[in-house]
Length: 580
Image (tube, rainbow, N blue to C red):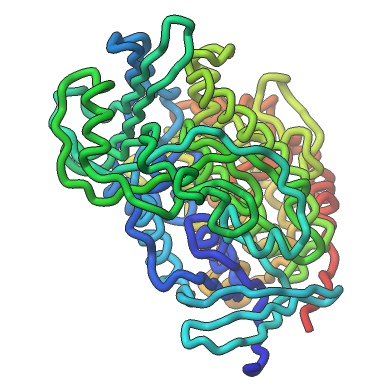
């Protein structure tokens, strides 16, 4: 057995979820190792849909532009039944939402995340497999098999399992994974079609019998490139993995989910389905990749135990309807990573990590249930209004208002409250800037919490900024110093409680012609009134934005000190158990 190195966090699995967890941990300055049993990225267009909420968090770390330059736009979906168009869903979001829906092959998403992570000094340890682990009150001991075939023992403070539907971490924790498998088998193909259909629209075409049973289906999602789609359809009998005696799950665990072995579909198999179901005649070409796959719906009974956690497919699997899986997993990773960073750095107690399960498992349960319903009945069968369906599919309605970290509600009942997503807005101006900015521009690059202070008078803002600084210990200049996350410029005091916290003032549009740049914190004017419209401040009001872009608290500026003290108490700020 090789020498036992140590790391603060060990992550098993370098798909989009594991990469996201590592990226956010490194952004907070946490040392981590990222291992994956595969020798290289798989060249498959598996998970392809990118939700607006995912793009928002990628904006926060400066990755959104690179992703959008590679992605295809998704404008909507056309639904056909027995050759007749029955529904048209246009993916239109409110104007204040900064990003729309997009599609990108999973291997490209992984490449961009991997490049971003490499820029933070962390590379994937390819061909390295997690074999087993044990944990104790002080840490986790993991046994790895490296690409060279040697076994290595690693000591980590925490272990995060992002290792998919057949997760070694989930099995090692003994987590229940309740659910079932769909009887149907499907095949996937990454192909080009020469039909003349609206650009950017997905296609869902089915055949329905006289008694209303759907017995044939074709789903096409646009990909980058001319006429390129990821197509899915029912598998023909000759390709059935069950016929070949397979389909019990490649992990030998009875979980029939994901790509299966056996013969891969040929172009002729896909063409036959298109000939039957396509709304217009089309010739398929350039088959890049194909596979047979199975779908299950399952969720763990808890998202972690002690110092070990699961995220993404290791925690929940479900139909790919609405492209919820990968995006939900990325949100899992983001929720967990900033909390781990605070605990590892001793700025929050280990109890903070219990909020990961409390916040994310209800989301996973809702996603599993909804995607199963949509897989059976389609989006058009959803009982909610079209706007609600759209916002929910975009993951913009995910929130933690009833979670353990949500502060007391205040202000108008229909205003954003603690636990809600912090809305973006435009029209924020700086004295020396020629163009208005978005709130996302203000948040970008800031790894920690951000305290937003809104008022119409400079005196209110100055007083609240001083009170906030006294509680969170953040330098008056706010934000991240030249030393990186949580490090202040020379001569300024580093935060003893919430490293990297920024204090930002927002001056109301109706304020008198004052000079906000005279404040000791960064200050913007709400020149378009968009911040006031979306956040609905009740007089001078403060907001705390968490590192994952959700509101931690909302409070009158006069109560800034007490509200921020409550925020710290909610995070259980005390020294964490050190790793040994």
